[in-house]
Length: 388
Image (cartoon, rainbow, N blue to C red; front, side, top):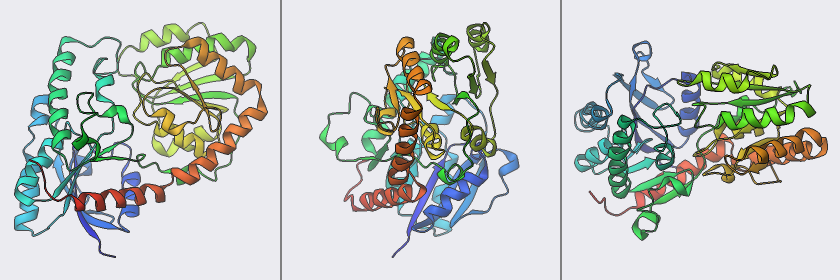
């Protein structure tokens, strides 16, 4: 089988979740593809030369304004150097974000004739309703950035050869019904390192778990209110909220303060997450918007029952009353009722857990991701003519 030469553009800072996970993902992909990675990263990670079958070309990461990020020239110069001077003839360019590297990928395509895949890993239209840190109200600056970003997303998505999505709402509403856009869409879940969660020793630490950030966007206020409702009936259970809360922590602490069974904790390194996940009684993702819900898949790999809000990409992961439960987004009473159902019915919890693990093995393993990625690359290479 011929291996395809791919160029990844990573806006960075990469390795935030640890180089081990990135290298694992690339090792899986290396069975089918090889190539180059141009990545913005911090100084301590500039020493990497190769990850799997991919040459690593680091660019120093600088926290700059959104306008400078959108016109980042260094990716373009580095890619053209690799293609024309190093003779690294990549066939496909993959941009994991239409905002940060999507435009650069389209410009590189002009000179190299490589196909462009733009991956959309967030729900931008929904996220723009909130502030930059996932706060309740966007500032004027946030609104201006959101307006400019929508214009750029529409352009990049419209010009890409292939668009990888996690759910249908990720496509700008103005483009959703256009036939030329629809034929370029590819849907499959993002890579999840499930092997770190499978085959662990499973225990019941009698706590409900959430892991993620930013908290308002993830609906932590809804979760705290729902837990406060059910807590008198389940006094032996705690709620653990784990993650980075960049703004408004006082708001959540005040909601939780009356209840001694609520723990608002900081972020964890990935290596510590599986152990915490394997000991929870129930995992909940109460997001206001969610492209996919990677943590739901991690919980399923631990054979845990899950509850998620019925928004965006979550119903693609959680099939109600089969491998988890869905609740109406923003509805505290509905979430409280669903929590009580799981904690109060061990048979239901066991059914959801078993089905969740089976569903994971059939749809969300690393091998499934590689096969989906392979199909996407093959589809991109069949595109006859780029449209920029």
